[in-house]
Length: 287
Image (tube, rainbow, N blue to C red; front, top):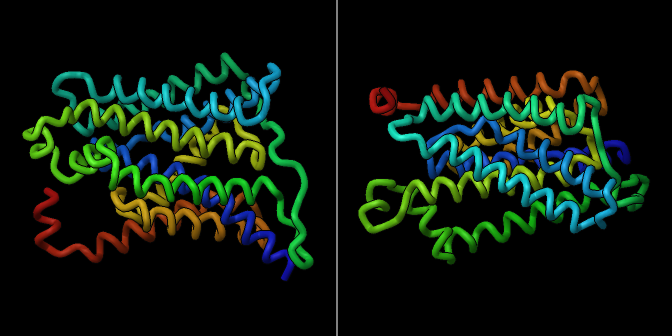
């Protein structure tokens, strides 16, 4: 029972990281209709940057915050490259995000090499019954809950959040009332970078990362986002937590190498299920 509880908390912590990545994907897709395949790269850049800043002597907290800001800046740059080219469509934007991910591979190898890296997070563990829970796992869960709690008033009560929601609902109407849709798209990419970067600095102490970890991260984040049809953050959060717990149970009671297979199988199952639920009229409208 103690092992099950430990796997459960560990899975929820990893699932929270997937949820932050998925929320970035959902935010960008809602506003720009672009599936950002560079989302996992934001987490890798932030994790690597935080490790370098800590090695340079910056204290915890400041180093992680700076790394998240760097990821937000990278997100803004990806948004500029993706959205500001005249006449660029959704498909070309998708290819641009894929290309940005490959460019990031080269930059990350030049800066940090190809060996996995990590840095110490919160030390110690909390004993709950016969189980020992890492404090870093509890930190990941707490920070993620706080961020999702802040995103709700941000999107419903602030002018910037309402402008993003207006662009997501109807870009033409938003443009008609004076909202700069392209600028809101850049804000969405920046927010996606900040959310991905937060996932990176929280997960790196639990799981060492390397330049190609973004493939694993985007696979899991995309699977979670698909659970919310790439537009609904609530179901994406539920999908991410489910995915994290299932992967932890597979690694704990089976083999860790099957974790990615679980994510891919879940994503395919959800896509088939979603497609089966669409009516003939919806299929016709999607053409």
